[in-house]
Amino acid sequence: MSAFDPKRTSPSGIVALLVGRMRRWSSCPLSGQCCCPMQRPKAKSWAGCYPVRGQAECAIFGYEENMLNETTIATFKSSLRGELIKQSDTRYDTARKVYNGMIDRRPLLIANCADVADVITAVKFGRDHKLVVSIRGGGHNAAGLSVCDDGLVIDLGRINYVHADPKNRTVLAGGGALWGDVDHAAHAFGLAVPAGIISTTGVGGLTLGGGIGHLTRQCGLTVDNLLSVDMVLADGRFVTASAKENPDLFWAVRGGGGNFGVVTAFLFKAHPIHTSYAGPMLWSMEDAAEILRWYRDFIGKAPNALNGFFAFLTVPPGAPFPTHLHNKKMCGVVWCYTGPLKNAKRVFAPIRKFKAPALDFVGPIPHPVLQSMFDPIFPPGLQWYWKADFVRDLSDEAIPLHVKHGALLPTMHSTMHLYPIDGKASTIKKTATPWCYRDAKWAAVMVGVDPDPANKEKISNWAKDYWTALHPYSAGGAYINFMMEEGDERIRATYGKNYDRLAKVKKRYDPTNFFHVNQNIKPAK
Image (cartoon, rainbow, N blue to C red; front, side):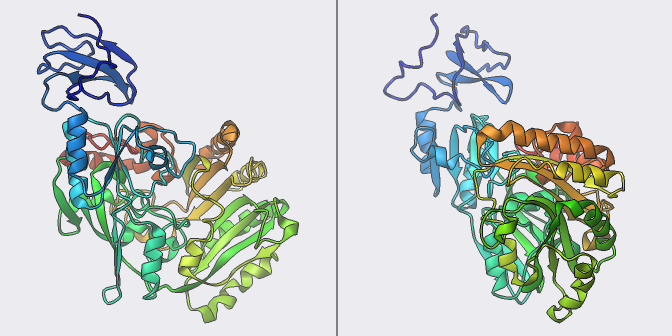
């Protein structure tokens, strides 16, 4: 038999479409043994071999029941209330983009699910056709794991709704909601849910990874305020997980990432926070070592109502920043005080007395405005390279290394943040959720960021060098949402003694590791 020619497709569409870009073709003996290592005994004619995430798999051409062809794709499309986007569609290149412009993956199909029924249909389709499947909420994942090559993206963006309940102080958010949507809906009732610092971040990804931001010291991690979730499992079942229903699954999703299913709804506890006394203070880079030592000692003793993350940054060249600071490398703290506003000036008096800042934008600010303050500086599409660690102690030996690398910021958008994760977050037991670093004081992140792809190597090397210098002073693991694809060892270090329990839950709810395009926890053996 001669090699199969993909150009000679039959008009009836029986010939299967390739999953992804076909890289090689070969023939199979009629005995049903595929030419590649994966065997398909049901096959009666041809097989085309292609690599998927580093493994050779095969697509069967002919009479196999679950072959992927024009007819099956059309049937899948007609079964969705949402939209199915193929590689040939004009919207494809826009639809496959994620927040991190460094990520350039080409899925075979993108299912823009309109509701839970669509999610169930998409999961079953991906499973039946043995496709690699990734889940997209807001698309902010640091490593770009919300999109995959040569597989199916289940996009939850259309499942975007928020319902704030002022009586019970809860907020219900759809799996495709963004934190800006939550902030807007909750603020009308004087409520807030602890989240991150960029309002375009998806609710799903941030929550499932733990969730840190302006309210961590006051209210705990985002997962500490999660009451229940609705999920679609790998076998297509729809379940609710809470402290009373499927409690093992509920435990796992509060920090275990997207390993256990597709979360279509989140129910949060909300807090009475409307207007904070918040904003950035900046000091000269020459004062960085002194500021860091003072900050280390101050924040650990501060009341839980006061949060503040330290940063190395370059001042953006535009309003509202004064022109004499434009493009200047500086150090700073972004504060957030949620206590009574009448007490704010007294709380900040020792801060301002220690060393007068070169810039002081701290004052009363509505919570949604604080949450979206950095959105214009970090729009979608920038190149991002992330490195991170948990930190228990900001030692005198580590501070000079921070100052050295902080002064070498390679681009205007590149930065380093030290997020406090003590306060309320540290009162939760290590085993209460998968987040086991409850004794750490900070989550450190070094991000090389720039709009120009030509600077990819420069920003990546800076982040790697900074991390390499400070890692010996770290606690070992890192905030999972701040990690690139760094391998099993780093994932194990991040979950510590909770990893084995997560693997057991994974085995129960996803024994074949269907959901593996994530910071993957493999099912227990």
